[in-house]
Length: 83
Image (cartoon, rainbow, N blue to C red; front, side):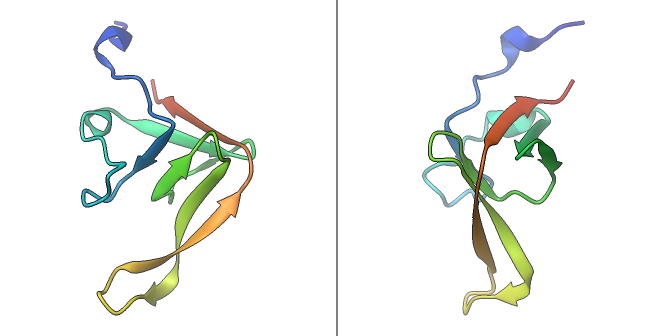
């Protein structure tokens, strides 16, 4: 069964944080994957395909509000829906 017609198109920039202006809740109703430099990443918090970067949390480091500190990595970014 192919339900690609009900999936929204993946935006150029997407964030998992609901407070971000780049958060699109309809996309998160489906399983999505992020491929960064031809390797699938499971820890991506935000991505931008056109600018070629992802943001991932650093290890155990949090800011003064308790949010993880993000590291920006540059490279080739691909977003896709998982089957």
